Length: 147
Image 1 (cartoon, rainbow, N blue to C red):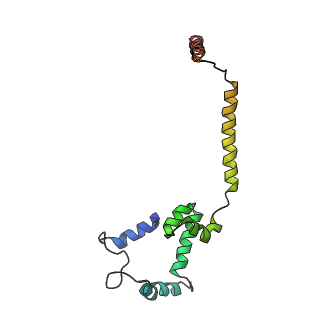
Image 2: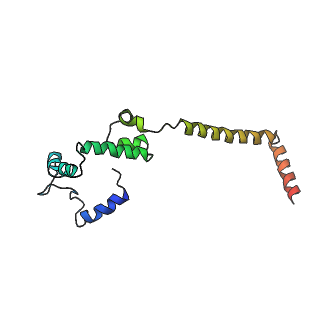
Image 3: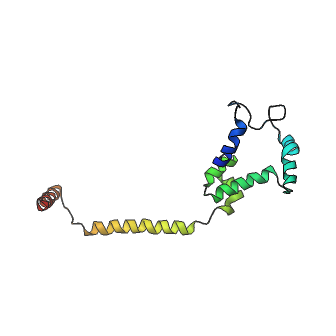
């Protein structure tokens, strides 16, 4: 799961003193924090206090995926982040959020063609060398002219 720096900084104080195997978020008596208990004791009261009725942890998962896509994450990264079995599943759910990049592809193809065209023009203007001896003679001649 990606952890933005601002969140890591805020969590640093919270996890200070915890061991590497300790839970970051544990049940009241320690151990695994189960979703039902978390919702009843923490999440749902916070949602009501913030007047965000209807908000669920799963909706926050969708928000995280949408923000990752908006930030430019590729589909494989989002797939890994969400634990989807395949990129197809991720695209089926979030494909509408991936930007239409056809203009970028067209620009890249134009740039590639220009590069190839420039190289082709360069090759057409170079003298043709028929054999190795001729190439050596031309090279010697160019060196002598350069002196």
